Each structure stands twice: as C-alpha cells, then as structure tokens.
Image 1: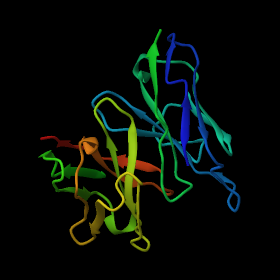
Image 2 (image 1 turned 135 degrees about the vertical axis):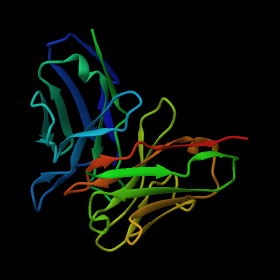
Image 3 (image 1 turned 180 degrees about the horizontal axis):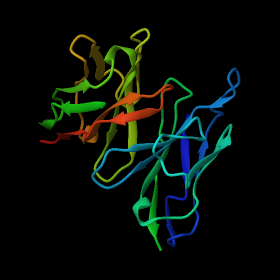
Length: 112
Length: 118
C-alpha cells in the first residue's frame, strides 16, 4: 500500500489551523471491526517519532486536544486546530492494514 | 517506564554485515510485536521489518527482504536485526519500536546510526 501525503511542506501562522492530508493506494478500513488502520506521528529534529493518533482518529494519551485525525477508507486528515510554536515538526501517516506497514513521505510544518 | 535502547550501529563497507540490537525494559517484552524503522539522512521514515509476538511470524520491506533478518530473544528482552550485503542506500538511523494495542508504534528508541561507505 502506497501512502501519499500532501502537501510536502506547509507554513501556517501561530494560532491558525494546519491541515495535513494522507491518501492510501487502497482502503485501510477493515470491514469486520470498522476500524481504519492508520496512524499519525510527529517527529521533531534530532528526536524519534512520537505517536499522535491511531485508528485514524483516536488521540494517544497525553497528546494535546488541538490535534485531531479524521477520514476513512483511503483519505485521511490530521488537523492542528490552533498552531503552537512547539508543533513545528515533520508529520507522517502510516498504514498498518497490510502486513507491510508503510509510511507517507512526510509533511514539514513551519511557522509563517 | 518503557525503554528501548538500540546498539550495534557503525561504519561498514558495502557488501558487509552488521547486527543491530534493541534492549527492552519496563514491559513484558514477549507480549508485544516489535518493529524496525529506518531513516536515511535528511529523509523520511521507512518501515523495515517486524516480528509478531503471537506466532513469531516475520515481515520485511521489499528493499531489505533476503538481506536482513529480524529476530527476538524473549528471555533476554531483546530484538535484533541482522543486516547482510549492505548497500550505500542502507545508510540510516535505525529505530526499534514497540506496538500499541494494534500495530501502531507507541514507543520508540533513540536510534542507532548505520553508515555504509567505502
């Protein structure tokens, strides 16, 4: 499954909304449990990735509620409702539907 | 507290071999699927391999299948990645990661750098 993110980079003003998109080449919705096998990660320079969202819309414990995930099937969105300076990072989506768990190419988020 | 510590990285010539280790603590290692993810300098994340906790089945990215072997030792709480026939494009930071309740990755190590160069 190929994961494609858009845009590759994004500049947003502090306090504004940031939206990152992720599209999978085939559906990652498992019909038997109605779950989308899609996660979002944040990576800051020099650090390992950090899990933000799993099952497409479930926020990981401790993640601020300004981060939210939505979408189903093949199209997904990560939204940061009000951008903070500490949100500058690269964001990745990952599917874990197939036995080969692929990442998107990443979206670099900067402050405008 | 969950901790994952990778080791074994270094400089190796093309065609050479290297074995990475990941030592886990703070959780019941045998109960979790474990994954290797790599990141080439200045590039994005690439999923490499994982080994399932339930049945020990192993899966590999096309780019490493036949050259890399993942394994685990549940007594030593350790995950391994044997890398053979290394190429320049295997140069990367290699991260060890633990799954959550699904196959999403909740905990990551700090990574170990592998450099393939003559």
